[in-house]
Amino acid sequence: MYEVSPRDGLQNEARPVPLEGKVRLIEALVRAGLKRIELTSFVSPRWVPQLADAEELIRTILPRSEGVTYSALVPNTTGLERALRVGLPEIAVFLSASETHNRKNTNKSIARSLETFAEVVPPARQAGLRVRAYISTVWGCPYEGDVPVERSLELAHALLELDCYQVSLGDTIGVGTPLQTRRLLERFLAEIPAPRLAMHCHDTRGTALVNCLVGLELGIRDFDSSVAGLGGCPYAPGAAGNLATEDLVYMLEGMGISTGVNLEGVVEAGRVAERVVGRTLPGKVHQAGPPRVRAS
Ligand code: HMG
Ligand code: MG
Image (tube, rainbow, N blue to C red; front, side, top):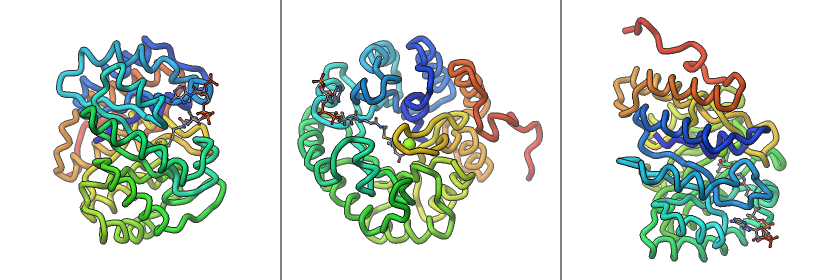
């Protein structure tokens, strides 16, 4: 379970959430048992003002981080310098499989993004940081439509060769369907071992959970999610929240798969998220609550 709500969730809020609200949310996530949490982004505060308090947030959270690995997005060497200054143990680099989304999101071509990461990942590794990578728009692009799997696969190889420990495949705008997911993942898994891959599904069209189930059946064990379904991407019109953490925990635990995460605790964190952003959030288990009876 890789929790992205403080970053992917809060980057998209029209009204930036104050530091104190972010801290309350993260504390609730930790209480629920989440062990990998993406806190924020070291991106340009002009591009994403919602996360302009990255340093302050990390300085507040890191000293209390027992047993939790915190991470943040880093787009370039400026971002890496900022991450190193606050002593973050893990960062994530990100690019898109489609040229237009990559330009809208980072103001550069995919080729230039890879060149940039060649300047970011080796020094990060030398400094002892773990580096994760995202590929966005793998299932489809809001500007270009279908994206060839071969293009994403090539990028995944390039990112792993740079020594990223894992590549998280993004259905950025939540267009994926199960058969497409099966075909796509089978192509990836023919060349890349499952532990090096993760899934990052937005639930725009209600297919995030079922696509993750397809991934689970094929051997994927790492899933990104966001409490109560908080989130979106400011540079992907129509991208709704991520797969809700509660929904994922409910499904996995119901299948006898131990997540280490406490469902009641995540539901409570979802309530905190709702108070912090001041609006109703869409997660299904978040809205229904944990069941009193469990079907056998
Ligand atoms: P740019 O304007 O091309 O950058 O932006 P630049 O290098 O020309 O610099 C312009 C100014 O920004 C300079 O300041 C730099 O110092 C500053 P000035 O001299 O004008 O005062 N700058 C920075 N400041 C702080 N931290 C930095 C940084 N870099 C430059 N790291 C840039 C290029 C990449 C910075 C910009 O496009 C950017 O910040 N983009 C981030 C967009 C973003 O965060 N998008 C959402 C996250 S991705 C996502 O959600 C998808 C994902 O969830 C997976 C999925 O769902 O598929 C991960
Ligand atoms: Mg995302």
